[in-house]
Length: 150
Image 1: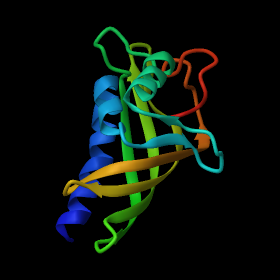
Image 2: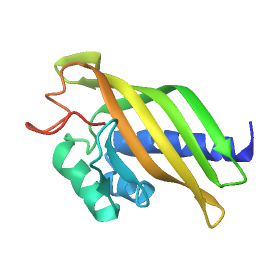
Image 3: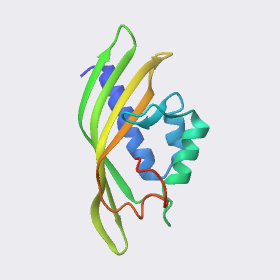
């Protein structure tokens, strides 16, 4: 594993860590240079302000300030072009949730298609696309009417 591989894997892991902590401003900072949207759709949200707004208005935070979730990212396929300073990754995600009165359960599963760019020597997300493949009970995760994103 190269230093670039590790840095990019850390970005993927950091995203999950920030969402699960309810740190939506941190998510917005992590994705500040990226386009965020669904796989196969042209539309996207861009920039720190818009991405932060999306998370704050779609994802519930509970009494402890978190969504009470654990995002598990697996099956990562990473391709790095060191010379160009670009990379892509494809991975699966499973979101688990547990709350009082709700047993631990998977609530959504799908795929991420990511792009990265090396900016001033550091790797950054340049695009995060998601696709939802399986949907469970997201009624305690997303606000009513929110798109099924993660």
